[in-house]
Length: 267
Image (cartoon, rainbow, N blue to C red; front, side, top):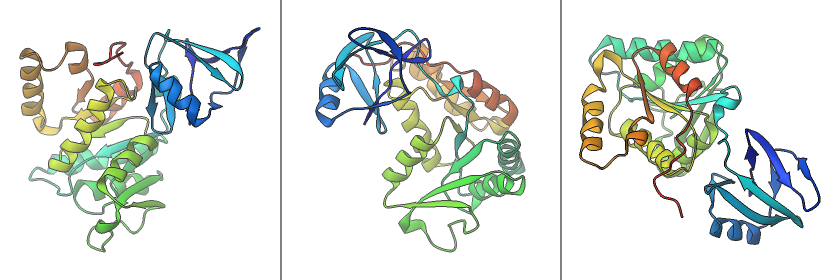
């Protein structure tokens, strides 16, 4: 595991005798990991991030102090990869397929790698093919049970086969700097809401947006507004869901996103 510490976006280590900048990560032991978790740090993938305003611990015989002046988010650096969730069907409107093609091509032009579910069918296949056609890099992540000729995209430069849907979602989230959902069904909703819930809990600072093609997500957005009104979602967490009807606009929103300071639960 690694401990990340940032003060105003820069990694800082507080030695006993002096303040000194260090590489972005410092290896720590399992025992130290457990101790830091008790003090308010949280695991994010293979990384520990602090969740409280200040935490103190020992790392390699050095006293480390962490201050939450500014959360690191993917936007402090260039976004390198975006996960796209979308349907394994094309839907009844031609606008859905056109939007998937536009998004894949845009990511390629912007030199942002596409991370997606590894399929060749529906909107999944369209967004991947568009990215490949325009010279982009595509990473497909697919459970081994779906590696059949009718489903898996066999022309991907990087296809990662995992054992389960849980591993698929985890790996896609770890690989990506942000998330976009095109129209889709149960799988798309489930994947999107899981990363949304993780953000609400403060487990990652990554942005996610809905590409609302032809008003597809309007009923869902209305329901989220209703849920906030009824007291089940805080206003600042309702604002986590970015929305646009054009690929260029949603990408711009992802780049400008800053995570809220407040998380749902904190010790």
